[in-house]
Length: 155
Figure 1 (tube, rainbow, N blue to C red):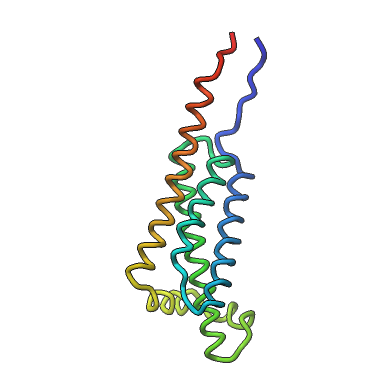
Figure 2 (figure 1 turned 90 degrees about the vertical axis):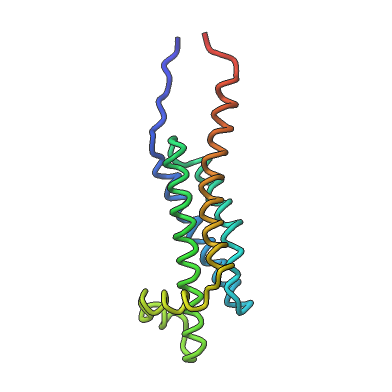
């Protein structure tokens, strides 16, 4: 009998990877939205699925914790994108550079601008992206575990 290697219950590298994917996805979402002059909130769904898939392969071993992290990271990505979109709109209205506005806008003003521009579809899209992230992390982990448990047993 060989010694089994025990995997850690919390993969910090996987969590950091998923966090970076979420922030990068939020930045790309914001750039596309600023270019199109629209929120493009439907991008929350594919971004949430992608975050969930990243966490399913590299995240915590616990299915519930992976789903919770995926949902949280998807909401963080959506909030980051909406904050960047609001900052970009303020910069365009004032004729200033985005880098000058990002440090000065504050979360209160950006949140108020983002909230004022959101409609029911946008809020539903952000919520659906978060739910999709949680399901992608939880379901993929469950199917992988089922495949591993049906393999040949080591005697």
